[in-house]
Length: 174
Image (cartoon, rainbow, N blue to C red):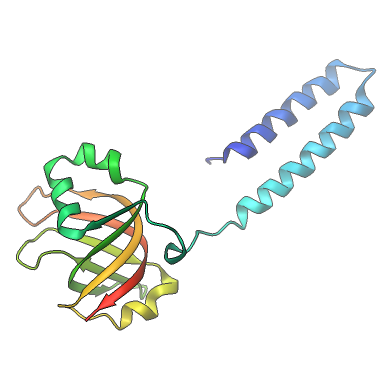
């Protein structure tokens, strides 16, 4: 399990206090008190982390604003450099809607890009924005904002895909 840095620090402090508790026999009251305080802070941080939610992409400022065709071109030209530039960033992408897909669990994926190309930007819509995705139509243009999570490189001539997750629809142009 991966712990956030704040919980790693608290776990280290707790371990240090346990060691000090057994080494310093005369300071056991102080060490015990510090242990209880650190345990309480750790529990509070753990509770905050457990209940943490993702931020709504519609409320975040985009790190990069780019056209879908330009984003696809960047990745197809040099995916390593593009990963350094886009991966994990909030990307606002605009372009024509090629297709709207609905998953088995009811989630939407909006596919943006040039209709003449097999490559596309696949935007998985955040569940809180599903009602907005239901009104989208193919052939229109849209602006979506999401977290760039990678690139599926074209190996078989089927087209490459840039993947954006937790997307929000910023603007639907008809």
